[in-house]
Image (cartoon, rainbow, N blue to C red; front, side, top):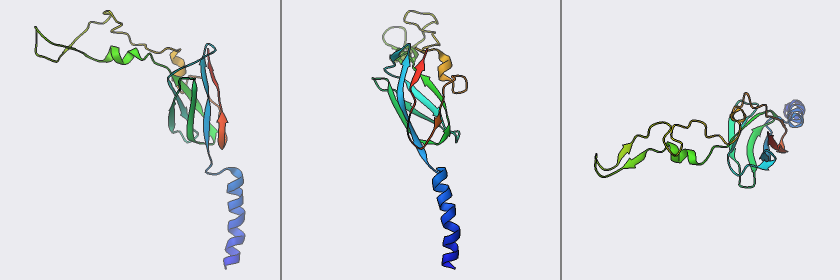
Length: 150
């Protein structure tokens, strides 16, 4: 009985190993915009399993995202102005005219860019996984994919 089971299981295991069943890969590369590396931002990858994974862009423009399944991927890049957080953070006031710590409302278009809605430092189409036009086919192991944005 044991030998019969081994004769059946061994070929199945060999086919699974050769086909890469269960293998995962890593995507690594450099992100450039207008031929210059981006110094911050995020790379998003939708793997063949439909799960979106993200990785930060380092100061030298490189990124790495691990644990991706083999197969076709869609890639997007976001690079938002770090001043966005400051613009979106409510301003606190104190003193006359109200209680301490009251949140001041700035009118849209006020000095400092209040009311601005587009803080992307690259064309926003690159931040959309379905419209970016970016992607690659991932194999098991380390895969290099340099992203050159125009």
